[in-house]
Image (cartoon, rainbow, N blue to C red; front, side, top):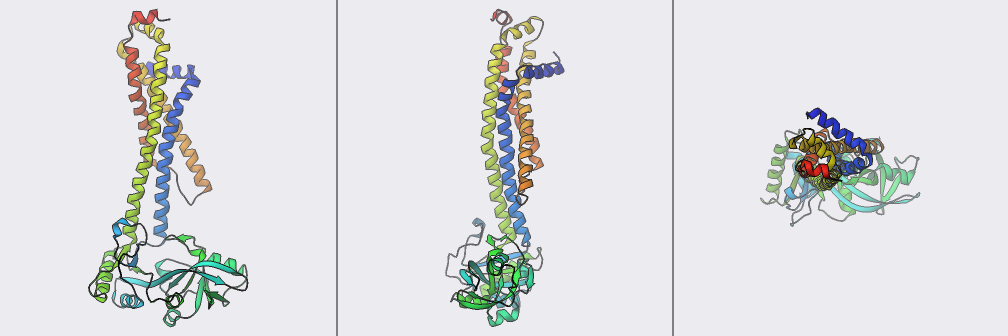
Length: 402
């Protein structure tokens, strides 16, 4: 029996038993869909985080007080020593680190902003005039904190978009006085709606000069320093400059941690890749269940078609022909289920992308061939046993089977 005839017979057998074929394919449909969907979720998360990082620019550098293993951290490290960063460190970096284009000390804390119209619980961030350049922030009304504002510790404030709306609605906020933790500040700017950046919602924050923030929180220690290298290629030189300058100021001790966006992104990608592979491996269990379902149904089919097998053998079919026929039937069921699974997962992911374009979980094209061949080999592997059982049936026994 030629291969073409065997394949045609396999499809005819599927059509004759539509319900059984559909139920058998269901395992493969679920298995392939699960593999693609879970891999798509992992890939979508990776795209989302990568875009978030790249929106900040790829030459940003974070300095945190204390020495922390930066290879094992995903976010701003927690101080593990007595190291501290001061405004004088920021001034030294601005003066001597020629590879940096911007440097800002940052002070961060929770607080309350009050006006006659209302009160907002918010995050307060102290920074200088170079902060907007480091974080690619856009001011839609007024201005950001100037160098003069920061040098003098002036009581001025820039409002995040949501804070402005909550406190002033559609009214003009520029020039108005607000109380930041009971200290009056004059509004000088409004930040463009931005959303999350580095784990914080910029729209729900207010920005004041670093010196004002240190006075507000009654401390001389900075939360950290943020800087930007002049170019991405100059990132290593910038890290080297920062390390040398701060070590010299800290009596030769490297009691601070430097994290670049590149290292953070690499660490994040490594974790997300592992997560994606883990999700894919979990989904393979569904494929295993689907394969066992195919094998089970094929064994039932062999028993039901014993007499048909005997007739084929009687008219000249060889054992290898029977073997091929049942293996191909198993593969046809498995591959058909796999193709339907690919189609369904594509429909689901593209529908979700339509409603939630910010989280792009459309399946990567590289997952399609592995998903197809996975369904192919599942049918091939789990079809062998039933096919061998069918091929070994003796002709005379098959013809006598009722």
